[in-house]
Length: 120
Image (tube, rainbow, N blue to C red):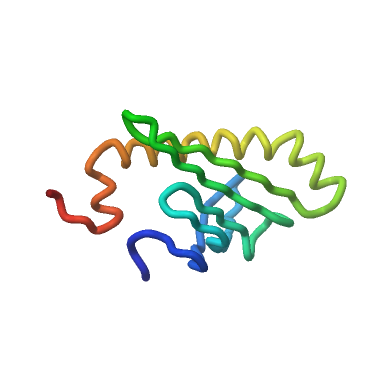
């Protein structure tokens, strides 16, 4: 198992339960412009395709993080219908909750535990 910051070409596999079904998704860092931007794209998983861009910008008092998340479900027209009726809203709420956790870690010393950085 690797710890620390993701690098270009790194893959991460997530296992999570959504709508009562366990999903496994593998995503790879395909673009990296540290410390301002990185992009990960699904390599294996339930979506037809998925791209997640992460932007970071210093604003004088901290850092603003912005996510751009694009996805497409399989199954053609049926998948597009599910995307419009359910998944778009569900994934937005999921990402907002995940960002709140990231914010909590980033604004405390908890990030040091994740990156194995001793307290100064």
